[in-house]
Length: 110
Length: 111
Image (cartoon, rainbow over all chains, first blue to last red; front, side, top):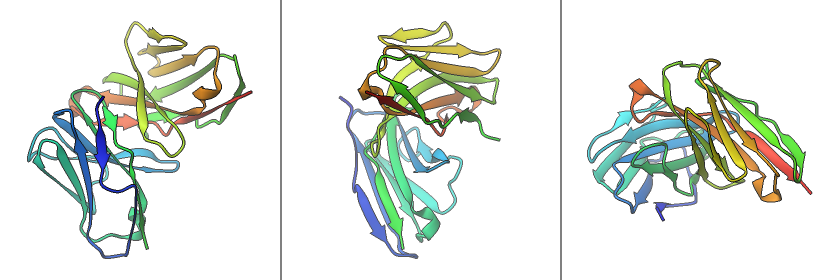
């Protein structure tokens, strides 16, 4: 079974803090994705990566950056957290298709 | 304009009922289609891909109607365990790996 893990299930940060969300997959997938999920808005793509050191902006990249130094790990960085970044963050990995999701990180920014 | 639209529901159906959800998409060039299931406070999980000719997996049938730009999911003989939110997902040929998710349709199967 594919396993996608995320570093934290719940995270509380303060406005202005730098936040790192880590995602690791164990199936040698090329493609990895970061989404946020908000009520009424569904899943929205922040960034995706189709190879090591490659990244592409999704629909809502503002306020976020990503890093993919190793194939199995895709990190999402909030440079300066703001309250409107309070959300559920979901990582996914795939060979093709939307793929397999991690359990999510519920981030609250105070 | 949303790329993918779903009726949020909720759909409340008795056990054993048949229920169908539709999902419309805006881009006629859309290429790949999927249904995901998301349980409360859990991550989405792939339920099934949707093929042009339609496909079935046990009690679940997925259909694609390109002319009217919608996909459907039919669940027969509903079980209590089918209670979840069902998300449709669409990808477009020219966006490579970018997938568009609907906001989901909530289903509750009642004993």
